[in-house]
Amino acid sequence: MPHDDRTEGVVARLLRRSHLMRPEDLPRLVDEAAHSLGASGCRIYLIARDQRALVPLIDELLDADCHGLDGTLAGRSYRNTEVIASADGGRLWVPLLDGTERLGVLEVLTNGGDAGLLREPFLPLAALIAELVVSKGQYTDTFERVRRALPMGVAAEMLWRQLPPLTFAADRFVVTAQLEPWNAVGGDAFDYSIDGDILRLAVFDGMGHGLAATLLASVALAAYRNARRAGMDLVLTAKAVDAVLSAQFGPESFVTAVLAELDLTSGTLRTLCAAHPAPLLVREGRSLGELDVEPGVPLGFGDREDTIVTASLQPGDRILLFSDGVIEARSEAGEFFGTDRLIDLLVREESHQQPPPETLRRLIVAVLDHQQGALQDDATLLMLEWAGDSHAVLLH
Image 1 (cartoon, helix red, strand yellow):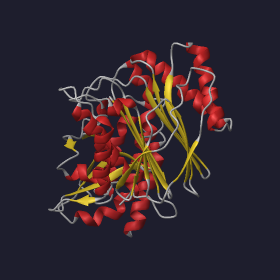
Image 2 (cartoon, one colour; image 1 turned 180 degrees about the vertical axis):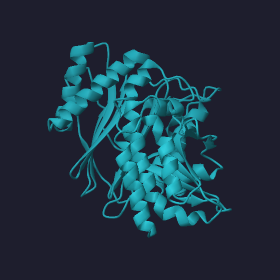
Image 3 (cartoon, helix red, strand yellow; image 1 turned 90 degrees about the vertical axis):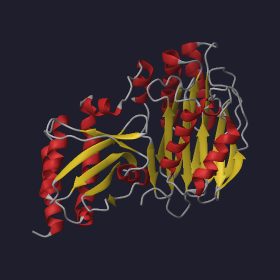
Image 4 (cartoon, helix red, strand yellow; image 1 turned 45 degrees about the vertical axis):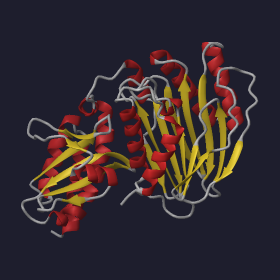
């Protein structure tokens, strides 16, 4: 049987079996599919919640170790979203992508042959496996449990269920986000939506910490989506969110936010700031500093008079939205992470020409390292890259 026909048959067979597949059956059935394509085995690795390791999704028949993201072929495959063969030809590492969301990697074990020969047949198989990880993960705790190195708090448990995928991309843009501390996040949230040629973005920071702050951010997020889906513009959306927060929580509670809209055809960015840190702009590897926005007042205070500020992006521009927990992270000596440090790191990572999701992962790791891994406040980063008429740098 020709190789393409065999690959198509294996993928189709796995797809048919997936309809009645228990989530815990996935590793075994994937291993069987790999054997049918000429490999000696196959293992699924998922990215850990702390974004520092790839952890095996295993059953009783398979065994595997974790892989760090730095200094390993598995980590390089994940970081750069590229297929990598080991020097001895014994292994092939294939990224697991749900669209453009990085879920982990697939380790393909060869029968002592050239791992590169398995590249083409395993690309469609890896695509299906990624889809199955997402779909079957809705029916089990196993997939989520293996990703957690630490217990997750109730506030974080509630919030993560409401957030969109960390990364989404199309021909003209990439949007990607990071949120820490992943297991104890309390008051931050982010959102985005693409409708035709308009991309809408938002970052929220609820007053306080823990479950109370999560309730604030969750209501703000729901009210934002409700207003957005009703076709309201930025000013009316802010007023709608403000009214809901005021009615539910009174004048003692508030949420800071940045709401933005990007016209993907023209590159026109419209921004509304509600007492939130101003977004940063990087162009051609150089920082142009903060966007010129009106600071406004927090959502929930009432009597809004918001100002929309318009900026014209150029192809390749990157916009970074963030919460104050990023720049207010303190070292053991009491030194703030600060906006200047954030800008310096952003420009440095830009020079490495990393895809936006990897740039953001490195930035959030730097924030965590600055505060010895124990943030005192939520830290949210959301990056937008607009590519204009060209293609955004995301996949290799």
